Length: 389
Length: 110
Image (tube, rainbow over all chains, first blue to last red; front, side):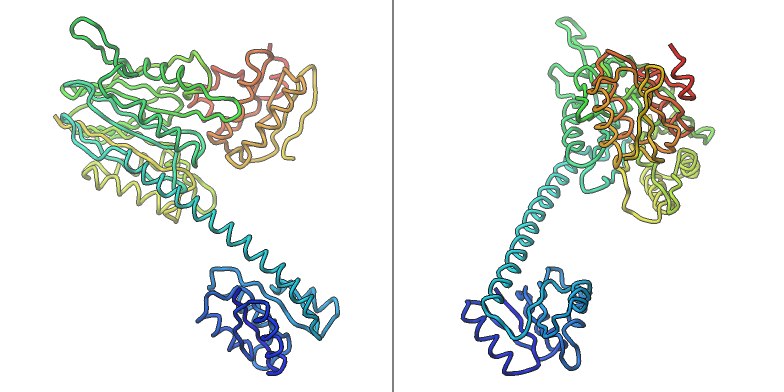
């Protein structure tokens, strides 16, 4: 262990230094607090400081406080040498950041035992930090995996898709996607798994997979042996199947809210179903107005045998749909007031002459201006599509 | 404990004495409701009149208790404030629970 001895009396310093070297430690020396800070700065391996209390320039207690306030990221175990054996001084010292006390004159057996106690604490802390680093690395690589699962902004058959996604703490439980189901039908969804962190993220990964159309027997299509060989399932059927497949356990209650829709890229007709998700918004380019698509339903996974409703709307060229998770409207400002649906609608009303990209950053900016920070408490996700035949 | 329960006219009435039923409280609420159910309460009324905000985790805790009862007994929600009522209507909770304006009405409701 690298140990720094801080002591103004040269003979005392030497005695201590020799004793510690004999025990196998690497020893550094300083004669007052200022010098000690310099030694610590240039030798970041030092984890234990044994310091006299009474010293000229900067005394032991001031040194201890300076270390606690400094930018040093690792923990320095601080032992104070004192001739004062009064209780009050010891309480004061501990309150100001010291870890242990050694009475002068020194008893070397006691010193060795107390040093070992300090080393145990330092090693525990190092082991803990190592574990935290491993977990953080895992979380980061999971977040990268998640980012790879997200669909790229794309134009598919007359329909432009783009989005904004910001998980609350590295990993989120929000997910979205869009894809062609045949030559004129596109499916799209945005979902929000309750809670956030690892369990929600893992669940959202698996849902992303389930909602991907890859030809085989899928949740999104029914196949037949005769022409036309398949039928694209209606949104309410898809939500019902999801609900049967993903019933949450009472102990964990991993359930999710979702908006799922089909758009006919030739006609602009959209059929839509929602399960406990915030109402998606319809941005009508002709009247420059924003309309809520209200259709409620029990979130997926809460109770078996739920039914859902379909809503059909007819888009006009240039119309957009805005699907979002409640993290958008539940963003709170510094006095706890939420951004809310009305502010979101107002924000969107100002974006009719914006490109999709500009609209996405406008909404982001309005949310950031509201919260006063760009770190959000919940996942913030929105998916935008525009029909432009 | 931010919750308390009392028995009235054959109902176990659980009051949530917090203004936010969110991720930080949902696990204790769930555990508390499970204890009530394990101890034989099969007519639960949850008094939400103090709750001004509920998120998806809080909602999950209430539904978890309903799932745990598994169709035996009943669970009613009472006294929801506007923001909570909005969440209930968005998520169609009236399909799962009887939702009443007050505890008294919840007791009387058959």
